[in-house]
Image 1: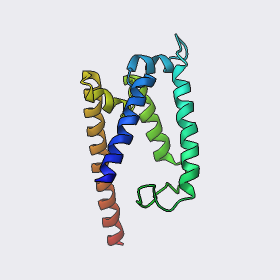
Image 2: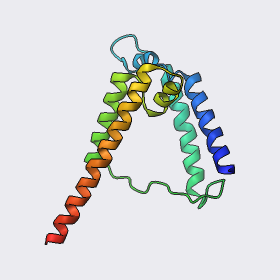
Image 3: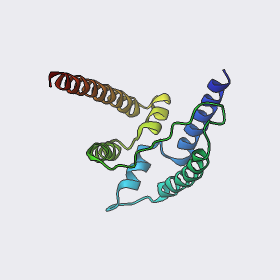
Image 4: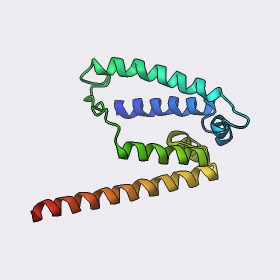
Length: 149
């Protein structure tokens, strides 16, 4: 129960931060991405602040074996830049540029009842489901091919 309350509070603070910073406003996000037009640099400060917090948090996390609530720490170990990472980044960036949402702000905005955000979240979930389906098929195919040799 303690974990659930902590998770709720962290999610609440994160969501409020997204609202206060303007990340839930697709117009503000698209203004930030419009480098050739009326560029709005304010979200650069939001991102800079998030990076600063992240650098500090990961520095602390690397020195720990458990979280502050006692769970195991599972930090990423790969630093490879491969085809999947590049393609995923391009798809993420295209989606962000077209819709003005990334996943966290979209969920907050959908929770507030914004129709565009609800459509984005539904499309995102369908995309995640299709990806998982394709991954499973790939794993099944590769294990079948290995068993045939």
